[in-house]
Length: 226
Image 1 (cartoon, rainbow, N blue to C red):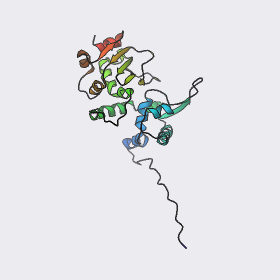
Image 2 (spheres, helix red, strand yellow):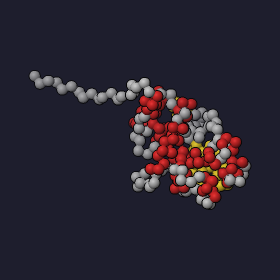
Image 3 (cartoon, rainbow, N blue to C red):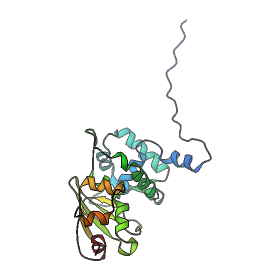
Image 4 (cartoon, helix red, strand yellow):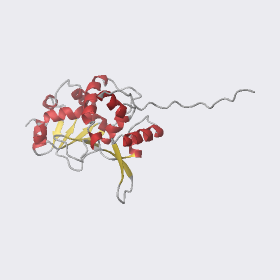
């Protein structure tokens, strides 16, 4: 009698490097494709699943759901239901998830030299420029003493960032203008990337007239170099 063919089995995905190393443990948690980009989106505050999917072009619904599930299990993300009338479920970072901000900022700084030319297939969202710009703004804003919220206007759209010491429960940046901003700046995306690459400082760009700063108060004054 012919041997009965056994059904093909799927290999079990390896979930750990099984190495007693801090770097390996970190990659166990965030080394999967899309995970850090989900963190990037959630640094802007709580997001609905549909919003995350819209701002992560290229990710399938199955992969996004799987990554969010893994991130919940890894205590990087939590889910909660918004009160009526919204009554929507949102995902947000835990304190441990927020701890990945300096990791993403360092990755953005390291990757900035690769953003020399935009490829025809490249998607873009205005708030993706927040991380490259944030460090340049911190240097120009004089630290926590003049910290606050800055609206940023690019041709690609608007977003806002928070400078100075992090405020518990407040997003580091967000899509669109803030409800209340301490300063507003306008510049182009290429200059934003040049600031991220360290090719010039924020103060130099303001002095050359390449950044328009508006607003009253100490933060706007610091950014103008007054």
